[in-house]
Length: 176
Image 1: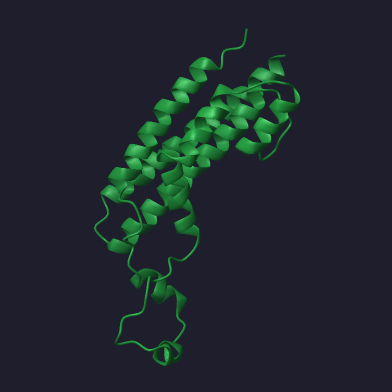
Image 2 (image 1 turned 30 degrees about the horizontal axis):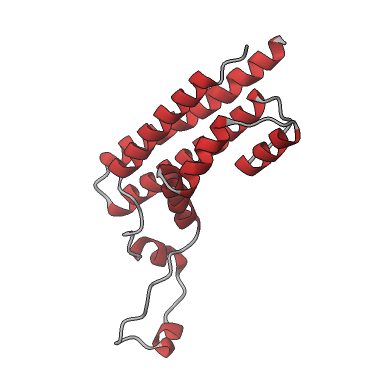
């Protein structure tokens, strides 16, 4: 039984660590004067914030004694359903994943992973002209508009909301 407590503590520590790394990245973004460095810190903060979500999924799976290496909300829900159990934590996270700050975090994470396509080409550019441009990916990455990227104050707000949610959910995750 002592081993289960040690593993659960590790999972909680990992979730807390990801929140800490997110905070450090936001601080670094706030003190950056270079636009590309600011963007890099904001993206790093988003990666850590999404990593917090993944770490908390592992924490939930451990709490419910589910043997899952990379659990998702659906995986946890399905495993608990097979035991005729319901998780209020999973239900709350699913709500926020559909509409709320968690949905915003996931959307920002996906945008960090995949290039944002321009809505439309300007009238002065033709597709032939674009084909003739050199394909220098590094220049493209740093010169693209980052309007889709949330600023560090928004990321800080999401982090704080997530921290408060995790504390609330952990308070309810008391073993009898």
